[in-house]
Length: 229
Image (tube, rainbow, N blue to C red; front, side, top):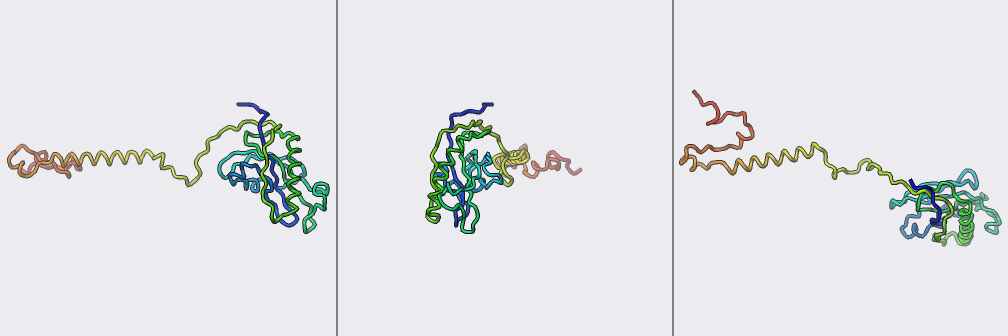
């Protein structure tokens, strides 16, 4: 298995709430915005119970793209937003920021990567607080990743319950189809070799073949069966 490698890339992101609006994605990787898949951040990135504790979460987007999301929870300070860091109800503001990596699983995130993401996240957050209603998700730009990432191992998974398996027919079904084809061949042969009435009268040796006899070989019928004595 390949070991951890450096020199890859990552994208910053930000999920936060404002003074009036609830948690939402404010900054997302540009490729997730292009694919319409940035909602995966809303689904998997939640506030941590311990401030600044780093979490590493493997996720799969709705389109099936595997990613590693590294994030931490930051309580907003007055220095961050240059005003009171509270919402309309007086609760402290929090934001979750970090980076997204699509090149493998990140084991030990480098603090320098998170520091760079925090600066970008706070700048975006200030713009959001300035116009919460009109704000639209911003695209995060790719940056060189310092954290080591291990290539993912592809694991085949069984199809989910309810998935059709018509592409893999059962052995019993195959045998049934073969038997039907054989029966059709026998019936066609019987019809092709049956003597017409005029030929039977002209040729006493002509033996008519009956489909019933072919299907039931144990039923006696002249000239092979016992004749009344």
